[in-house]
Length: 118
Length: 113
Image 1: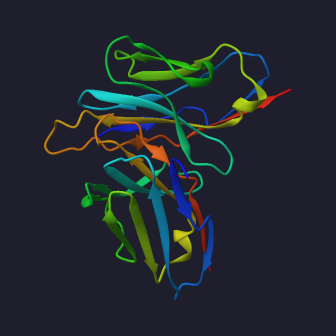
Image 2: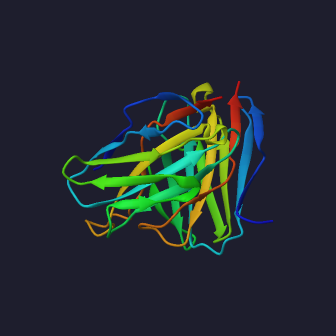
């Protein structure tokens, strides 16, 4: 089974400052990794995902994340945030669906609320 | 209409009521999901349907009853709920199961009195 830990429940930051949202996972098998964003009163939207290949993944809205297998981390970064980035961010992990009938269900972290102040 | 839609957006019900949540996806996807989102807890997967067949029931109480009449529609029938069932219920869809991007609807905010 997999699990996800998002180390910060809230991250306040000033506009145009850089930000890093931390995510660590636990799994006994190889995984896929995802970051989703939820704006107020909306559903979740995919920011980026890592399936294979380059460990540096670029997503929408200027976000990027780096898969670090040795540290079991998938931290999300943005060099300069905007007010419109205020939202809740969720890290998620799934297995690769080839273990004992698994279908690769997503396991989510508790989320990190990013608050961008002017 | 595009994407994933959910109705109603808000629902208040008593513990003895019966109600249904509806989800529709306009993306041509094969898989659909119900999630429960409660404050200060991770999203909880409830049910998964793939090609209209239920492939996952994540130990959900029987007072929640899903129905998937076709690949575009998903329902969640509710009866004799408890106050702790109050939450945001999210529907999602994806082309296939493993490694695929899930597209979420805006959710139904449920309050059980």
